[in-house]
Length: 135
Image 1 (cartoon, rainbow, N blue to C red):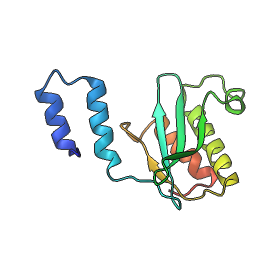
Image 2: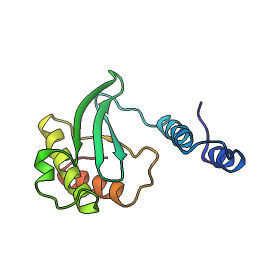
Image 3: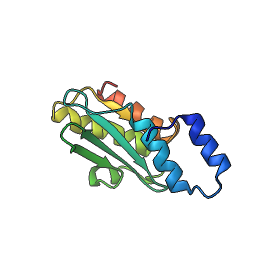
Image 4: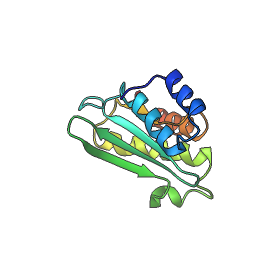
């Protein structure tokens, strides 16, 4: 079920019973319809919680996770005072790029999920670009 942004907003405004998690899932499905990871260009999926940020590089043709990274990783956590900041996300993006270049992954498709492209999500993307990944 692929819905346009306008339809999602109508659903949210009309139906007060539509729970936030359900709305988030509908929004994710509408965005995910356009982004598919392949062997040549795997998908970089991002999840942001209040305290941490997580990223996975996924090959959708095999339904396999090739690489994961988060602010909970030991190599990243030791260099940070707080994992809630944009600096932490940028550092994590650079580490993710370093790990992916070791596995010969240079080109990816960025999947921001239901999150807007600003703040910690943008910092992660900028860090990955600075590390050598091409979007």
